[in-house]
Image 1 (tube, each protein chain N blue to C red):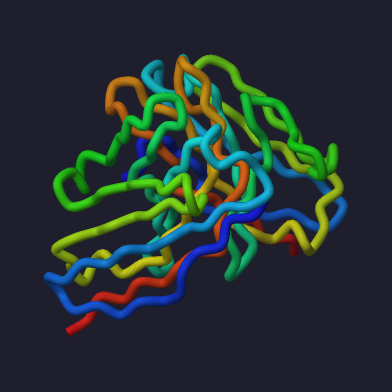
Image 2: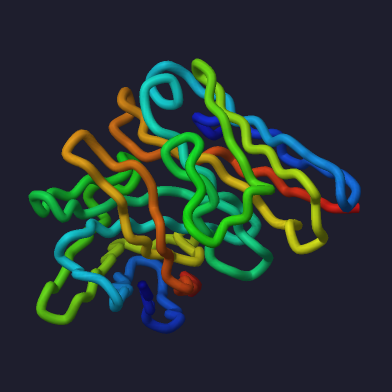
Length: 121
Length: 110
């Protein structure tokens, strides 16, 4: 299992960023994908996910309206789009494969290498 | 302020054992599976424990975990300098309808 993310980005406040996460080594459509970020020197923050069961997305309340998670099964790639960027969005963004059951998500078992997004004027 | 409470740091000598606690509530740990992740400096997090107590293949049995009520504990025995990392617990929070992580615990092997 391997998740390979796109390269570092530098964006201005108010802009948007779209980070990709290409999966290999497993049937992409049978696992959901989650996104987690980590601001400099800080802990892990869950951002949202897309379920493999029904394609449903869930997002952290503080990011609602600014974040979208999508997948392209033809290329086994997941995407995270974050809009109206602010300086406090500066962080390393990770994708991870989700182990989920109909009752809910249990854990994240494989992670991408991370993508640094810097928001600065 | 994280929903799940972990000690900011723990330390122990090589060869010793250490425990890292993760305290929550009935809306998260009390009624959902807990997983643990470790993050070596400058690298991505890695799954260490899933479904409260299970180790993925490749994780040595020096790592173990337990859950009781609204708290979970990660234990590491036979500490090695390579175990120095940040450790995070995580679970689903039913009330928040969100996945939550603990604030993280920095392990120092003296």
